[in-house]
Image (spheres, rainbow, N blue to C red):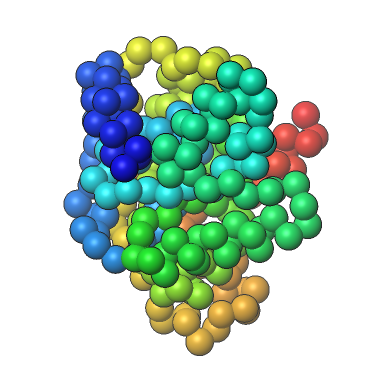
Length: 223
């Protein structure tokens, strides 16, 4: 309930201020489980993408967002719960497994699950190598993958800027990708890599970003 109230109130304000320009929204099915695989340019991607989708979108969020203290901690925790984010401890060794289990649960309920295959925000606006979690999720659940390109959120909210500057947000959805032909090959790391690369290639085509065949987190560690 809070999700829809927030979307109707704060969402309406964001629509007026940022006037989202959306292409390809018809590619998101009206019902059934769907994985929305998006590039990741800004913190506000998790606000603007669900804003333009009629159905509820569920993301995972780091556990720290739900454990803060004081007024700020309460506000962040309340907001994350209201927008449908699910806390996952990404610091432990089983972080990937916990994220995958969460995604499978959401999809088993016939819902939309949003995921950033790069695993983290792009450090420089380029598209980085995808992690294979998106492939495992698609193969294990049989859910279609709809690629989503955030086109200019990184320009409106550069790294270090808390509040995005005013500008028209541009988002592009691509045709869904069906990987059911590989259902019998769940667990094959070569197939998972191939499926992930196909998703990333679709994102590259939609977004026009330069592609880097390296994990974004690894690139950040070198900086």
